[in-house]
Amino acid sequence: MNQPERLQAKIDAYLGQLRVSLGELPPDEVNEILQEIRGHILERSQANGELTDEKLVSILNALGSPDQIGPLYQGDAILARARSSFSPRVVMRGIHRWGTTSILGFVLFVLGVVGYALGGSLFLAGLFKLVSPSQIGAWVGPHTVFDIGAHTDPAARDVLGWWLVPIGLFGGAGIFVATTRALRWTLRFAKSQRPTRP
Amino acid sequence: MTQNSRQAASDNWETQLRKGWLELAILANLWEEKLYGLDIIRRLQTQSDLLLAEGTIYPILSRLKRDGLVDSNWVESQSGHPRKYYWLTVAGRRRAVAMARYASEFLSRIDPLIAPMLQKEKP
Figure 1 (cartoon, rainbow over the protein chains, first blue to last red):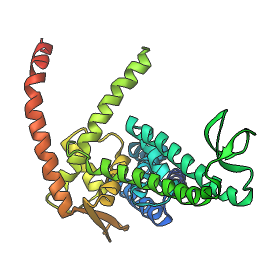
Figure 2 (cartoon, one colour):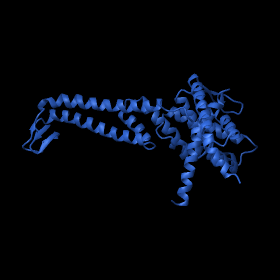
Figure 3 (tube, rainbow over the protein chains, first blue to last red):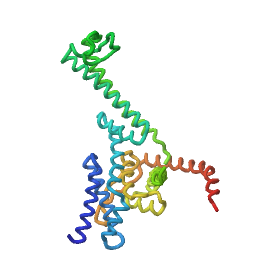
Figure 4 (cartoon, chains in turn brown, yellow):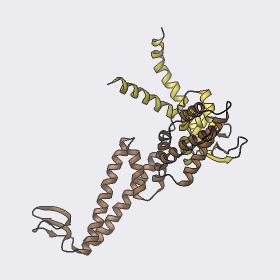
């Protein structure tokens, strides 16, 4: 391999690592980022005479490692997608990301997990009531204050009966949607409150 | 606290401080004209020591664009590869003014507070 080929291979290797560290960003966005960074490297390479191994290493060092740059793109993109998405997975990824840098984000992440777990459990209870009506219910008894789910206390009675189906399905779905909307709203609100200070 | 962790804590506050000012410095550079990434980097390097790794400027520009504060397009250049030029949007100009105003007021308020400390440092 001659020198120009070797240098080109080094640049390609750097951009390959950057592509990996850009993770799940959309392919169009990744290509545009790589084109911009490639342009930066080439323009730096063209300055001050012939490109050597040492000069290329110094250019790449000044640019920063791909592992350092990639997450900077990802963090912002994940939050931006979470603000405009209705997908619980995308919203929770954004909240999780926020939670790694802020206490409010962490608290919100915990609330999100609780909200989705509650909504999901209620929805499943409504669904399974259709499949196994005698085993699933909203139980109250001498040893059970109030428990929605499978029948474990023989002395408990089902206080909702078939009402658990609509309550579980609509209530569960409602809590699920409300959790998503509340998290999304908080992300947007936090963004709009972002101060103008540097 | 070990020597290393003390050094890391010191680096951290400095990094955070630089990061905060960097966005304002980028917007300020785009105030007069369209610039591409390396152009902005060169200016920042001559104007200040805010920039540590050159590559960190591009994710910031990407975020500013996503936030609608700057816009960009690709322009063919004589260097043989296209350059991505950035410019301020109307919202970006408003944000730049608000940040500049805040920064100016902030500095004028904190200056009397830190001046005695700096005075004390003098031999």
